[in-house]
Image 1 (cartoon, rainbow, N blue to C red):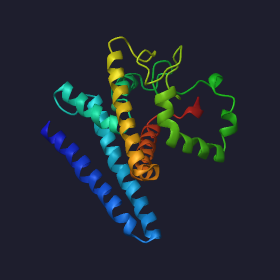
Image 2: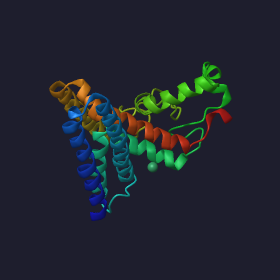
Image 3: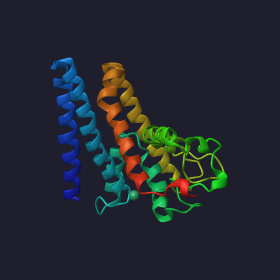
Image 4: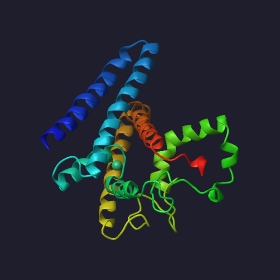
Length: 233
Ligand SMILES: [Zn+2]
C-alpha cells in the first residue's frame, strides 16, 4: 500500500506539477519559436506522465493497487475523474472486457464486426488515406465516442452509454456507483469551466486539454495494438 502510494504521489506531485510550473512560469519569457517548442515538449511529457496516472487508476479498477478495496476505489475514482473518466462505469465494462476479450457477442470494446454488419462506408475507407483518417479519428475521438456512444463496443439491444446509470451495460447493483462516477466527472468539468473563466480557454487547452488528448491517444493506441484487426473478418 505504502509503495503504491509513493508512486502516485511521485507521479502526480513531482512530475505533473513540475511540468506545469515550468510551463506556466517560464514559457512566456521565451522568444516565440522557443515557446512553441517548449509547449510541444510540455504536451508530450505531460501526456506521458498522465498516461501513467491513467494506468494507475486502471490498476485500481482491478483491485491491484492495495489490499483494501475502498482505498483502490477512492484513489481510482479521484485519478480517473481528474482525467474525465467515469471510474466505476468503465471499471465494470472493462472487467467484462477482460473476461470476454475477442468474443463477438460479449466483449465490450474493439468488437470485431462480421462482414455482413460492416457499415456502408467501410469499403471507401479501405485505402491508405482512408486508413490514416480512420486512425486519426480513432486516436483523438475514439475514447470519448466509446464512452458516450459505445462506438466499436459490444452490441446491446438498446442505446448504451457509460454515463447512463440505467443503461444496458450495468446491473442494479452497479447503478449507484455509476451515479457517483458521473457526479465526479461533472465536478471536474465544473472546475475546468471555472478555470477557463479565470485563465481563459487557450490557457486551459494548453495546460490541460492537449495533454489530455495525448493521454486519450496513447491509451487507444495501446489497447488498439492489443486487439483484433477488424478487416480480417
Ligand atoms: Zn485491465
